Length: 384
Image (cartoon, rainbow, N blue to C red; front, side):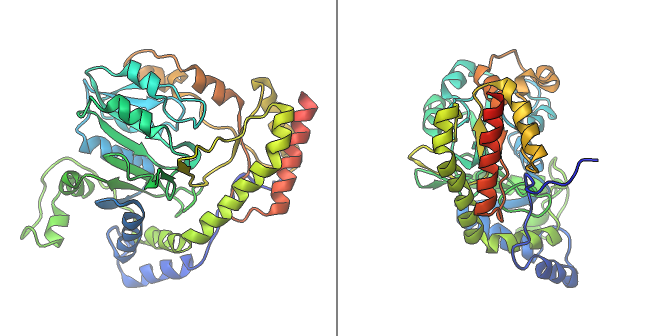
């Protein structure tokens, strides 16, 4: 049996009034979606991102699936997705029959590469999904320039890492036609499992509400727009329980404190690793001047792919949990199955093979950061 870690990779935190809010939701008798806490969480997210409407979902995957339905994507349509991302970014569209074009990432922000996107665009492309890796905005300026002559192509932000991050002063999640968020236990703000879709075009709101509510105009009924509600369209049951929304509200109430502490962890790693990184050939995260990160995670790129397994094993033996990140989707079994055509993504392949994520959570102390850094440096030195 593997002994417990002294410093795990992640440790979700109860920040304040989570249990009180959940008890209040239970006592209210409204525990399904659309209750008082759902409205409070939605209002916070709407103010933070400038969205026209916010719909809480059971996961970010659900939110992406709702975006696919809203865009009427299916067989014959193609969606461009970065190869270096979680499966949901592609799966949500593939399950509706759309084909996927996997795009490489650029090496600075690890976001979708505008140059490769320009090469991939053809008449079948209906949407482009962008990911703000680690909560650092991708090259939105370059992506917008590529799409300037294609107003028919929807930009979808997978902002699972990006809540409260900004690009040129604009909030991540407010930059695409629609955006999705995650409140999984590994994210900055959590409720166990949860997500949201942010609708940034007012023209999408009415239909999104119907798709969200099992294809009915139930929301229009509650708003007094119709005298009864009935089946209108396709859709599904996407709503988040108000009990989980209550947990989320307590997290969002502590947003300033959570982000401040996560920033200290990130900057602690960055400062402590500057010297060793230069000596050992480690690549640290790049923060473009026009980006205010969401402080979601801290990663290191090792100089050699063969080093990763022994480095991670050594750190685990010392009681420190690390992990790598995505296996490139273009080279996966599912990726090959659902791809519109074969694409080459060499940067994704290289980054995926060398990336190590360090422990990162709200309550990580300065002493623990120093211990992680010491362990990482020692492990790299031992296999160099």
